[in-house]
Image 1: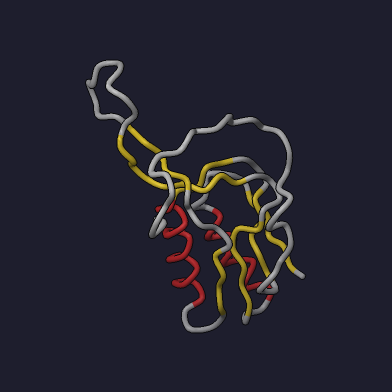
Image 2: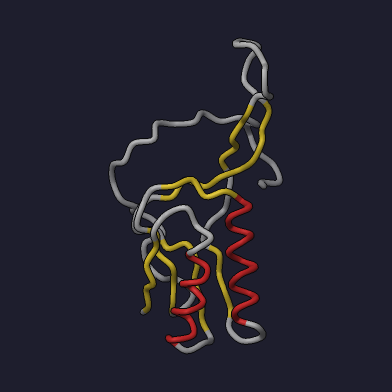
Length: 134
């Protein structure tokens, strides 16, 4: 969740399945990474689940970098609320992901270990991913 935002609520935006990522497409910090292959909104809870999986699988060795930050608020209205009455309150935060974005990076482990750890982490995400290395 962002500490401070200019506007509390945000437009949803059109969910077009067009284009690939132009930013965050290369490994910047680590030697191994997890790259998205589809479109999705990744929630803050999913990012936290992946982070915990990576830390648990790495034990003491290696370092991870999270290249995502959920700064898009998603609103919901309560159940059985009639139409009208304005926009609902902020429920959770997401990050929109396009194909080709590097989501997580890792270093300090062997290629085989990194591939296995990233495979475990990919099960927590809502789209297909692929393992990349330098």
